[in-house]
Length: 219
Ligand code: GRF
Image 1 (cartoon, helix red, strand yellow):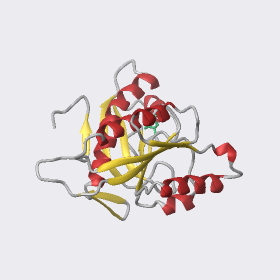
Image 2 (tube, helix red, strand yellow):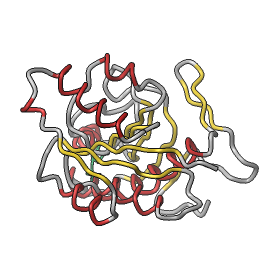
Image 3 (cartoon, rainbow, N blue to C red):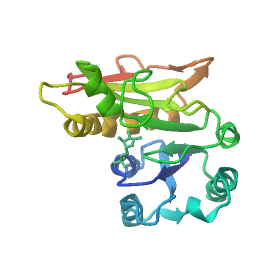
Image 4 (cartoon, rainbow, N blue to C red):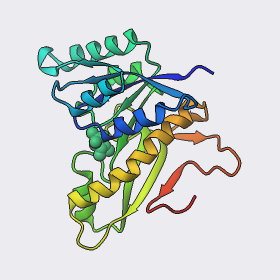
C-alpha cells in the first residue's frame, strides 16, 4: 500500500519531528516523511531531518512582505514534494485562513494541553497556574481558529506537586512523542474521518487508540 506522503513544518528543536521520523523508518508504517520545512535556518529539527536523509527547506518569513506571501511559499514547497498531509510540529507561525483552507482535513497539529483547555502560548504554564491535576497533549486537525479543530488523539500525564512549567513540559513531551506517531499512523491507515466538529476513529477490535494515559497505563 502507498504510504501517505507527509510534510512536517517546524521552527525549533524538533523532538516531535524526531518521533515521526523514527516511526516512519519502519517500512510498515503507513506514512513517510517527504519534506521538513522550517521558517528558521537554525532550527535543530533541520539537522534531524538531514540525518534521516529527508529533504529540507528553509522559508524565512522575514523574506516575505506579508503572511499570505509566506504561506504561499510554504504551500508551493509542500506541493512540489508531493505532500498529501502536513504535520505542524512546533511551527511558531500563525497560518492564514486561506492556507488552512487549502489544507483543510489534511493538516494536523500537536498542542501541549488537553484541548480545549489552555489554548495558545505557554499551555503548560497555564495548566500550572490553573492548578489542574492532569494535563497532556492533543493531536488535532487544524482549522482557522488557533488550537481548535477535530481532536484525533489525546495523552494525559499527572501534574505533580512542585511542578513548574518546565518540568510539566518535559513530562508532556514524553506523551507527545507517543501520540503524534499514533495519530499519523491512524490517518495513514485511513481510519480517521471528520464528522462535523469531531474526528471519528475506526478502531480495530481490541486496539484502543484514541487516548493514552501516562505513565504507561498498560494498554
Ligand atoms: C511541543 O510542545 C508541541 O506540543 C508544541 O511545540 C513544541 C514543539 O517541541 N506545538 P519540539 O520542537 O517538537 O521538541
